[in-house]
Image (cartoon, rainbow, N blue to C red; front, side):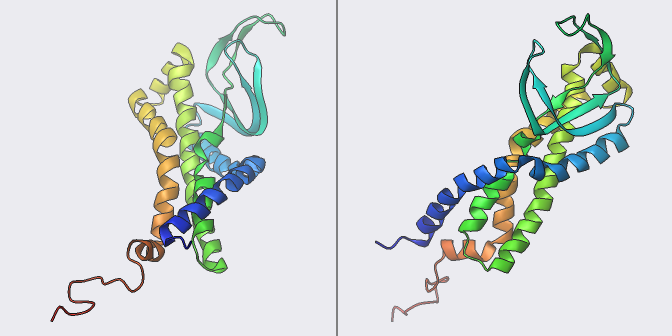
Length: 225
């Protein structure tokens, strides 16, 4: 049974998606590196009074201070915000700078989504390479936006009064930070790959919607007379 072009494309995309996610997660430290560097330049260049360091690799801690994840794709931040460190098994506690760790992968699943769509699209190898090059730049910019927004959100809402005071001194509005964080977390990762694929493959999409040989106007095709 011959599949319609739309069903054939959908099936190929579904088959490519699992492999795309596996490769994406396997090479996660490599994929996030450019986005982390972009975010680092923004955070240290624009908000140097809030952040003093941005490094790739780190540990995620739970509320009790236990390590729940350790990976090369995590991002460790060093801030100028002083916080109280509770006493624990490794020390008596005291006061220290806030050093949160964030997970940039939650802003990066645009890449495997776009990969599944792009690999299922019947285009030449050269054109596919160009599409991936364009997509990588846009996706890295989108991911960097999410990293910056979450970094600011961590100070504004997760660092207590000292973090909120630092955000106020920097002239930043908490509501704007919250909106940017939600936009970077909920909207961009899902919308960017689809928008990229549509913008780069309009001819193929038109072919799916209106197959070759199908009349496109009332005056085309056989006459009724």
